[in-house]
Structure formats: structure tokens, C-alpha cells
Length: 216
Image: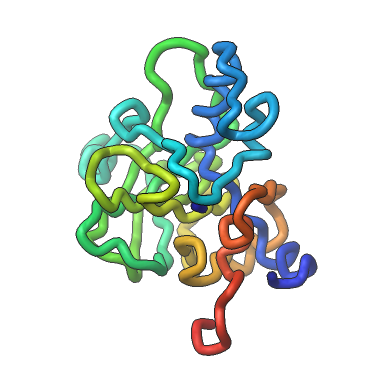
């Protein structure tokens, strides 16, 4: 669900499948399921994000660790990420996730969810607080039917953008649901994140695919 030239991908950074989804598929493979729904061996880098009915994320099992209010009340030092989300989520639940990278998930027990999340009422400009010093990826999901599951042929997933370790505020980030706009990494981060291009539908690998000049 989730073709500019390759050089442009290098300059802008390459959006990834959100880490929480890749980790969930890793766990499925570890438990012997084989991960057939995400490619041979359950390799998250070979996830097929094209429509097909696969449940990508169970929001009841992957729970946000801290709300924005709880984070502010905790006294933790924070920085902000500001940007814009492109795409339509009319009637659905919209969530912008801050996912900590390089965190080891345990093979049993609850899966570690996003560090924090923002629940905007609609797409557009956003600002979200993040604990300072975290190595994070930002992604967005739209649960159109509000069943707390992100399903390929029903809901929407904006490919994650890795920002690295945050020591100061970031702005200029653009998130986009596939086919609805190009995802953009802030200029000072462009080309610094490794990122793996998810296979499957070309609009999942590159959200800019199929855009006309008037969409830019």
C-alpha cells in the first residue's frame, strides 16, 4: 500500500517501511511463521507494500509508549519535529508515529511501540515533541475504518523517514501517503540515512510516482 531518477533518491533520502512494521515481521519470522506475507524468509526489507489485504500493523498490540501530554508532564528534555503531512484521511484515525530505531525487540511479550505519537485531526502542517537524543524515524498511518488495524487494501501508510539522533529541533519534513505527494527529508539530513527501498507497488517504493507537474 505503501520514478524520480535514482540520483534524486540519494539526494532526498529514501523512505523506509516504518520500523515498527519491519520489527513485527521480524518477530513473525523468529517464531517460525516463515513470514510468507512479506517475502521469502520474512525479510522486512522485501516487504510487499502493494494492496492485497495483509494486516501491516495491529495498533492494539503495538501501543504508543507516551502521549504528547505525558511526555510534556514527565519533565524529559524534548526537541520538536515540524513538517507537513500530505494525503487524505477523511473519516479515519490519523496518527504520526515517532519510532525509535536500533532498539532490540524481545521475541515474546508486548512489542515496543512508538516512543510517542501525534493524533492530528487532518493532514497538513504538524509539530510533534520528541525526547532529545533519540535516534528516530517518523511515519504516518491512517486507519480509515477505525478498526485499529492497518490493512493494505483499506488503510494508508506513509513510508517512514529516518532523521537520525535528534539533538535540536527539526523542521521541513514532508510525509506523504503513497501517490499523494513526494516525501522529503530536511535538507541537512538529505542523503545521510541508509534507508532500504521497499519492493512491491512502485508508489509504495516512491510516493512521487505518478504525480503530474501540478501535484509538485
